[in-house]
Length: 353
Picture 1 (cartoon, rainbow, N blue to C red):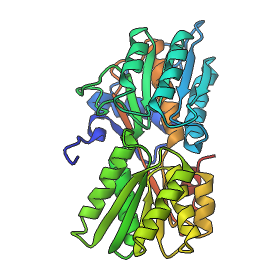
Picture 2: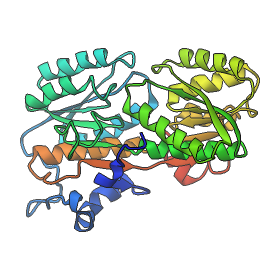
Picture 3: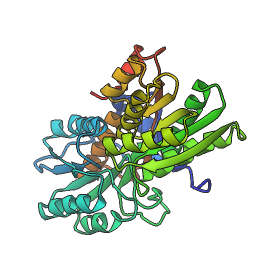
């Protein structure tokens, strides 16, 4: 969600505690210190770099799967940036985490001749061809949260997307692993409930989590990893089976919201809430309810609102000709939420609405 994998953030810029407005206002200043982020200045006499004149554009955001609060926040970020410019924002998602279903949606919006596609690819290889087809037909492509190829759109095998806007998920997996390891006292058996093996976020979060485990020099061991494809019921069943096979597990990392909800349900059904520590990736409202109720112990929050607004900003800048030399990757940051800081302003601002 290969230790030889490059650090994506090194080829882009990182948003730590910057909010969307601060990013946009500060983009010119950042350009002076980060060569890759050298954005062109606004045309003389204008105050908004996204001014599109008489031309009205259409952007579609295609999420990875329906019903995920994280994607609702990305959509809100896109709308917040694009709608004031008179841009039409469409939203769609497959009913399941399935690249074949997502390809059908991409093809449908190619036929509708949208101006840009913002997408969370469900597979970093399978989705290359349909999105390359969109690009070849003059449709701008920005990937958000997940990516194509290696995600290095500057020098990697896939370079046609305008940008990848998303978290450094290796870092996110490592943060989750370190927090979970601390919560279990630094030793014991842990389990990883994940999404899909072809999803870049799943691969990277798994890598980061495994890196954190490796740093314990054997004190913590991983008993297994399963993939639920975004199906909570399947995640619950898989975790239940692992708990029966390994009753001495002390920690579980749910690498997506649905994976974590399923894992937490299995722990609750086994009457081991609080005994088995559960780290929940993505700060949905349900995750916070479960945190307050002691069903999960840690929540790793991302910044999807930033992802959406930056993606739309990139597209509008490019469409109106002011988006020169934009960085190919912008890495947004994380926050670890637990019972001690859940009511702080920073934690509350990271909860998906």
